[in-house]
Image (cartoon, rainbow, N blue to C red; front, top):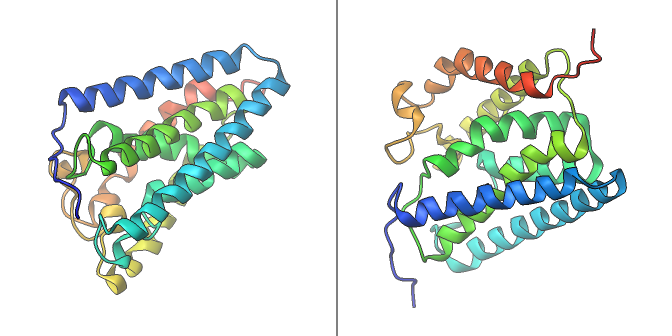
Length: 231
């Protein structure tokens, strides 16, 4: 028996509650972690990494067996946020600097749009609703944990490097979408109306027009986390 359909409504009470709980969880974890010694922050990062891994595996296992998103082509971990989850685990577990850089910039500019203007059809209390907000909420927590708990600091042209890495994803996923007939990363068509992409033209060209605005936001995001020891 298929799950009942609950249409998602942006800025509904359920959406606002999801955003509020996400922010509350982020503030609580970061405040607790910031007050701990390095060993304590290390443990929190390891636990967060395991939570991200469990969520990632659980989500795509559920997708594979629930049929909530149709055939297998639409249930692959190929969305930008799926890649961010993989790099989030790497950043938390191994503290690899390129992963930290990509997660900080990529999530705070890209994945966070998913929380603000979700491109989803099923709303509360569907399983898809909870899966979506848990996944994106975890990404936000990890992105903020990178500078606060790991101690990563932006250097040199980290913003440009992050932009080039996101561009690499777009260039990779375009032929994949053409071959599979999918829309990962929204390179074939815009998501559900009401996102910032609506103002940047047609797919996939809006990614080209977004280069300078995104780089400008990346540069602003560098300001609070810039390595002050860098000459």
